[in-house]
Amino acid sequence: MLQSFPSLLAWILGTSVAAVGGAVTAKAANEFYGVLNKPIWAPPGWLFGPAWTLLYILMGTAAWRVWREAGFEGARVELAFYAVQLVLNAAWSYFFFVRRSGLGATIEVVALWLSIAITLVLFWRRDTLAGVLFVPYLAWVTFATALTIAVWRRNPTLL
Image 1 (cartoon, rainbow, N blue to C red):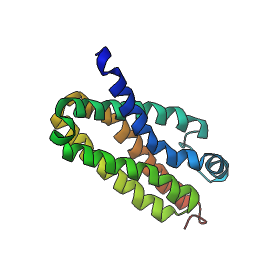
Image 2: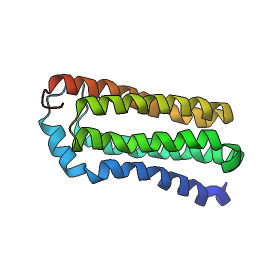
Image 3: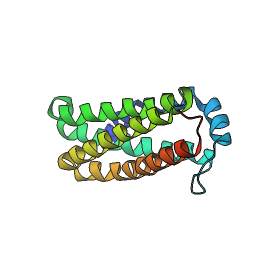
Image 4: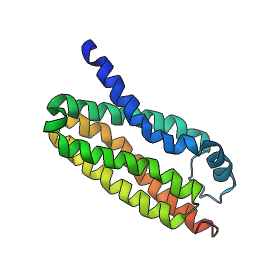
């Protein structure tokens, strides 16, 4: 396992590239999120950083397990879906915080949810623990989907 630590770390760091979408818009996002009309069940802005950090660790670990089990060639489909969901993950911040488009963010987060669900199933079939590690991510994005829609409905300026 110790020999595998560098590759695990590489997968986690590589996965964290999706955080670039959030990092690029972080200051504007915090200000913008603070003034939005949100439902009472919306989490405080400070919670998103720790939540996403944990999720990226779980996601990277899941992908690493699949890669370790089958390699890039053997897990081509699983890792392709993994890459798609990472791109969609990064894109949500653009639609919501840069474009300020409730419709765009909603369509995007539904596409993200579907890609996560497919990736979870594919990972689960390859390595059960990898699939299990994706469950919190799907749960969080399920919550984020509901929150995106709720915030969009409460804020008419989000086109």
